[in-house]
Length: 406
Image 1 (cartoon, one colour):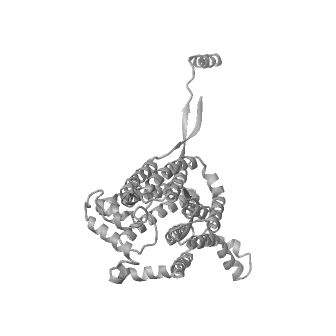
Image 2: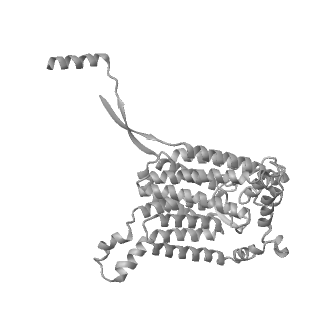
Image 3: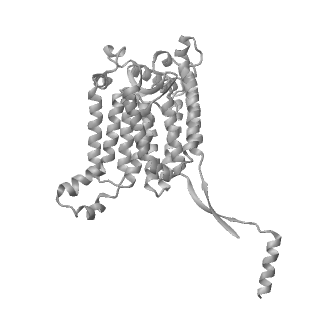
């Protein structure tokens, strides 16, 4: 007697890579944060305790959401987007301000940043919407039933681009929070998903133009952003050193002084000078104290996770799964590379944390939730045959039956 059932096979590599990266982040947060916290009489920085708590919450979220089936995730994607969108609106109404920016919901002891969760929601929603789209050429038979260019081309094109308008609306709300970094990451990740979908190169060109114009508008909207981008090439001029370019040049100096092996763990100077030493500019301390190897290992961990996600996406046949896995991979890779280029002053400061390493509870939870979703979607169900062991009594009965029939 044979019973057939499906057994799921999962690869735990992504989980362990993410855990290693998160643990490494705790070490660097403790190292980079104690210089500032000691001024207030605390040896252990508050960001360290917060990161531990958020890491635990993220791991719980990882194992919770990976129990949700792909069908439910696909069904819930519009609702997840809607709830996250409403949370961005809630920031406008009851949000908490800090350092002149209004980005959080909650109380001082426990705050969440909805914009970070929009990174996950945008990927799920776009994957849901784009997975249903057919190649433009294959829709001609349906479109030619209507008359006129408006009904045959314009209206169908707008319908196909409707998800992009939803993302742009979310980016508008995030930009109002003075969070250009998060808006840029979501914009770049969304663009990567659009070009992964079955669209024409003309549409890709149009989306690229909209992306460039939109990002330029976000920068132009705030005079301080315009000045930051304009003076960045002249950051070493005396009039800017102690003002607009203070953080980039000190971060650049720290990373250069680290050279190959660094100045030694705990011996860096950047953590005494930079205000965002545990978040946006944590790589300054990592590069200064550990040399090239510090940022290299961090980038290698994130790169390995992204590579695993892309490899898993390549094995999938369901387009929704492909888009979620590849979108998450591009999100992590883009954010890590942008943060590192910001730390070494290749790019001006736009406020982007390094995945897993930088302090930021909402960012860490959002990443772990995304990896939980990806871990679930990358699971391959393989049929396995299980043979039920029959008792000796049943075997003897089977032999007697055969003899009686002969």
